[in-house]
Image (tube, rainbow, N blue to C red; front, side):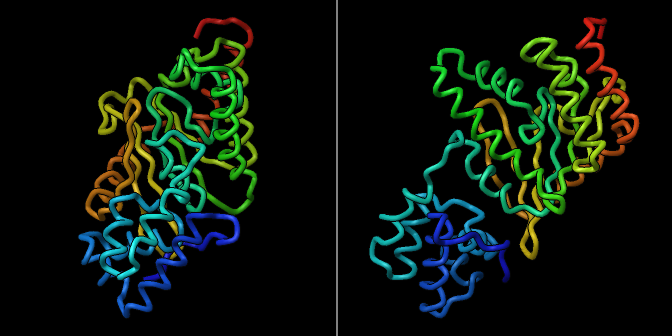
Length: 279
């Protein structure tokens, strides 16, 4: 089973560990599906570990050592691959995001991270960690802006975001910060770099009212879904689960404003924020 595009083993500990996993598996004469069966996971999960799309957790490292007869190799080395500049609950999703060909995301209460400006990101990070030092906040903002650089690529990933109207009307960081944040989204839309739809208040009830959803598709590999709550998050590759949330996302898309009408709303709100007008 093919995996997502490989990372460079010389620069990524996860990719190096994944390459070693592939070598050990092939040496043992096992397919990805066969090894996955011994760990009670899917073959695609093994493929994602091998390509570096997913981080190797300690519990899987121990099972791999036992299944492949590699003594304690994966136990000893998985810690290096697990190091991340992102919050623990989001690290695996952020790393998978970096190799995705397409990302579809619904955000309920805030602008998605890939679309945030530094000032907006700083306001969000400070709200999450009100007692953190400025240095910690700086590191979080820097990591978020590094993620957003992927949008500079003219070909991938394709980012399609549905943003709840409440996220646009919540004055995160103040009116000036919001004006800049919305102008940034509008600029990306006008440059045809992203697709954004606004889910208006009058759309009523919808299937993602309780959280945020991120769907990630990869070239030649099964998709993932990332589900996030307050300080928690999990990546799931179960086909039925991914399929269910893809259906939910499609319902959100048809309930949202068109990209053209969404752009008009975003630009109007940006102007209102800038001029102090009523929202």
